[in-house]
Length: 515
Ligand code: NAP
Image (cartoon, rainbow, N blue to C red):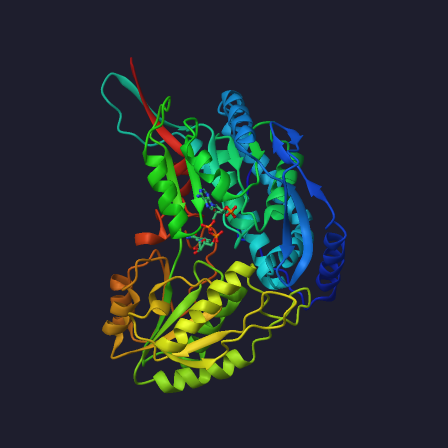
């Protein structure tokens, strides 16, 4: 009997046992930094000799892992392995496939501190952010495993006279999973396990900044007993092998999460049939955001300030759901800005191996450069309230930065910066605030703070985003509770962690047998 799905509880690092376990895990992970990782294709290690490294963003020169890079030859090998594995994996009882996910979840629970430590050191997540992510990865495995059991049940269908009618869900075939670096375990696990549990072999190309964390999932699925060829790990630069993976005539689907630019390119390339291609490729693309929190004059200001500060600067603002715009009713604008500045001043920035540091470094030199260039734009478009500078030189640190009096049409109000930069804009009333909130190309998350019931109803109707929150921050979606996915250029609204998600990896077959 499988128990009902429940979200994983977060660890409390104020408890000495958890703190000590985490410190030991950090030491263990650091002892692994000299490891070299092969590709993993058809159950075997493959080495190409073409190497790249991943680094600790808080210690620019510290190598975290060294990786062999896949080229076209290895993509072909992995594709071949995937389609061979498909012939048997598609026929494995979905209950058995679900059990592999439940086992993987159990292994993650056992290795939880270690996985957290990898995210602290390779992605610069603070301890709580890292643990929240491991918890989310476990939840995806537990949730999609149960979802598969539901899709496998007899589906309701209107009986036709003289016929036995059925509708069954069958897998698509071998496909490609392309995750981002900002949720290097949770999103990578979510997309991969959804494909696998529905019967589809995967070619997993991790983000090049966080390949070690991706490799951990390969280890975990191997231990959970996943057959050879069902999960093939092919790290390499998206710019170099991405197009080849996407346009490959044998690619059946592409599950992508990342930037709008890359997502749109994938969508366009996948739409053109290649010689020998037998299907319309399925594209699941979850992309960027420019998420706003609206604060009304009838809001609880203390709670709104806290929600904006945590939503904007948690994980250095590098969440697709991060609050990058605060749109504030003019009656409370000055007070809000002053209280926000006081709150942001208390944020600690530094290497996240030390749990006293709440904000770590941004991901890379490229990210730091891009964010600093937006800070220069912000200085022209608005008034700098706090921050605006880089932090200690050892890592890619940027201080939490707030600009006020930014026009709703400004570049820092409309373009995704993906860093710790918040644009604060004044609005006449709630109607204008929602109008500003909706005025970007994106539509991923949003939040509104007000105590007024009519205004809450209005926001629920008119704030156009895939994940809307009322009187709470706009980050922190829970698997099962807040199915996640955006409108407009934020993506295909796949609603990861929701009941519709597995359908994206399945096709329905209708069968009518004459009696
Ligand atoms: P990215 O630059 O678009 O990269 C995402 C993935 O695509 C990486 O694995 C990357 O590989 C690969 N890639 C790059 N070029 C490619 C190409 N031409 N063809 C195929 N794949 C290619 O995004 P990112 O910087 O990793 O992640 C940040 C972005 O993700 C932000 O825009 C954020 O909002 C978005 N995001 C969205 C969600 C959501 O649910 N909507 C969740 C998380 C993040 P390399 O690493 O080798 O370049």
